[in-house]
Image (tube, rainbow, N blue to C red; front, side, top):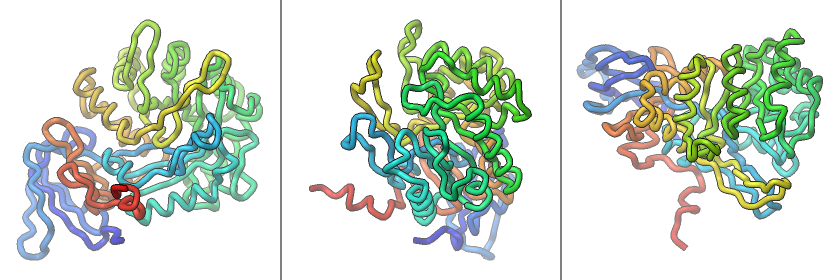
Amino acid sequence: MSDGSNLCTLIKHADVFTPEPAGKKDVFIASGKIIAMEDSIDLGSALAPEIIDAQGKRLVPGFIDSHVHILGGGGEGSYKTRTPEIMLSDITRGGVTTVIGCLGTDGTTRTITNLIAKARGLEEEGITCYIYTGSYQVPVRTLTGSIQDDIVLIDKIIGVGEIAMSDHRSSQPTVEDIAKVAAAARVGGILSGKAGIVNIHMGDGTRKLSFLEEIAENTEIPISQFVPTHVSRNPDLWASAIDYAKRGGFIDITTSITRDFPDNKGITPGAILKDAIDHGVPVENMTFSSDGQGSLPLFDEKGEFIRLSVGKVTSLFDSVRDAILHQNVPMEIALKVITTNPARILKLQRKGTIAVGKDADLVLLNENLEVDTVFALGRPMVRDGEVLVRGTFEEERDKPS
């Protein structure tokens, strides 16, 4: 498939959010990059680009989903509940152009070698993909036998995760166990110029974020070395997460599920974002991720499996859209949690903003703030809400029986 490197497109009259509001602009993209952004661009006859009239539409950076089970997830209800691998259009139809793949509960039948292969496959199909090494378990199951070596030597690996804490499915790591994981990831990141982030799965346990707070207080590892996710899964954890983020920690809000808090039924991720802002949490310390293609299991009070559903990458922007339209969060603020914030935290230097020289990962939103057109590295993946580029096996999957 073409990688878009020979494509050039001129987007005219777009209302640009970088994600900061930049006003009406023309944007020229070529060779997978943003070449120019001006009030008006006239290329004359020098080039013959495709021209898109974006009058009435908003142009925003391609979205970054920092927690996706690209191989599938689950298995908590035995083998038949292992969710399938994600398909390309499951990602792009939601405006996502960069994903970070991870393993979860199952680090046995799904491996880091599988994860790397899937990441490379998604890149061949047209998007950007990195991964975390490891899974729920500690000691961390790595590719090379070392967290530090994995991060330094394997281009696709940018951190560790998702390590489970405060969860009945975790390996019940100690504070010292988590500190050693973070130390190895930190040095690996320093040596390679990568983030070396430790992505932490937060369960419903009463310990909440206490391990991470203790490490930040009693060791030299900064609180910013961790990104705890699923932090809005219950009211007590959410209250702890607000305090944690106000102390300088990063928190990640999962968008694939609406939590039914006892005092606020059906609270959405968009409302969670608004609540954090109202409590004084710096928006720069927050991200959204979808938990896409992961299993969303429900257990009873004894920890017995009841049923599960599957996370959707499309929930990522749906939640941002809800924050903008229904929670009155300014667009330039809401967009940060899926653009500039994950790009900065994960050290994805070419991602997360619209600027000359950055990757041409772009999304056009229509007047209803719905995903209209998606460019990944300059290549149109979705046009007028319709998928243009499908993954290798999608046509087989979608054929009528």
